[in-house]
Length: 287
View 1 (cartoon, one colour):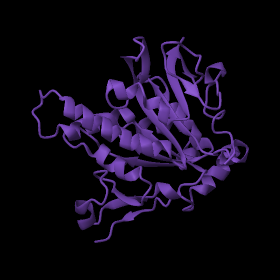
View 2: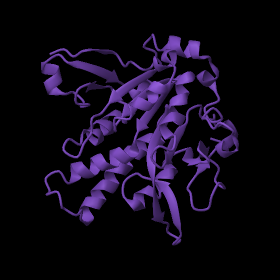
View 3: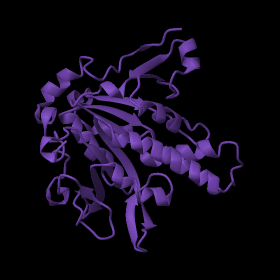
View 4: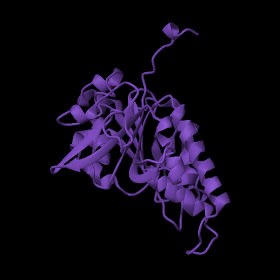
């Protein structure tokens, strides 16, 4: 097929990262004014979403995944979710097809990302916790002072790449949130990159996304940057040349500027009342 015959994609794969409390969650949450959000909360950080106006909060479906070192459920659940197949997640444990919750008829949520439309954005908060979960899963039978060996790091790399490869080919809008770390690049220079897997994996994470946005706080104000020329020591970039650092009040509107992204909050709110594409139907699991 000739390039002139290719149809531009109407969906986006976005990575937002930065230091803790730098405005990452708030930046993603603002999309709820125009979109439905399916928000996978891996680190119990949904409190920031409560800053949204009450009518807009109804546009956000929060799926809590109570991940910890003792119970590393996030990596297990998200590897099943990201395939796009229909899964049933229990509210109590964040586990797919949880036998305990099914037995006791406890609340669950159905999710099928393959059916998600352009009126919806899937948010994963965060890749940092997903990495921690994968590490805890790999070393779950080891003592607390165990140091990961070569094969462990290889397993982590494989798990992370399996997840990110699904993000890369996603046909729906997806935003992943992560934290920052400084790593040595292949040319020997040090650079701030998003956390995802090992340091070597983290420096290559950006290739799976269309837009990589860095958040920080300067002069008591939250800021965001997305251009490839923002800073030599900070990894950022946008395949559509979006420049968030030039905006007085940075938002993702310059990226999510097509389709339902131009609708009003009222229209977006009405979408949440149906089952369009989302099929996240809460209820009681049957035996």
